[in-house]
Image (cartoon, rainbow, N blue to C red):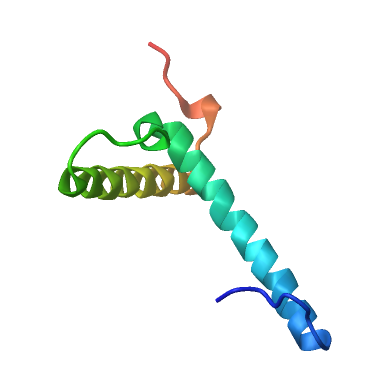
Length: 85
């Protein structure tokens, strides 16, 4: 959906604000994804089928990396219990 060009009423104004917030989140994630995999930040020089495979593969790897970071953050870690040698 697209935002209202000339919002009329509080509902349309709220919708436009929510739409802008959601778009910002999505755009930031695209930026993180493109920074992690610089190959998708440049024009593809391959067949459409290969480009689709690269996009899906990098999306899966990106989501996996995010999941692993979240899992690591949820595991309690205490430096005092760590054996160095």
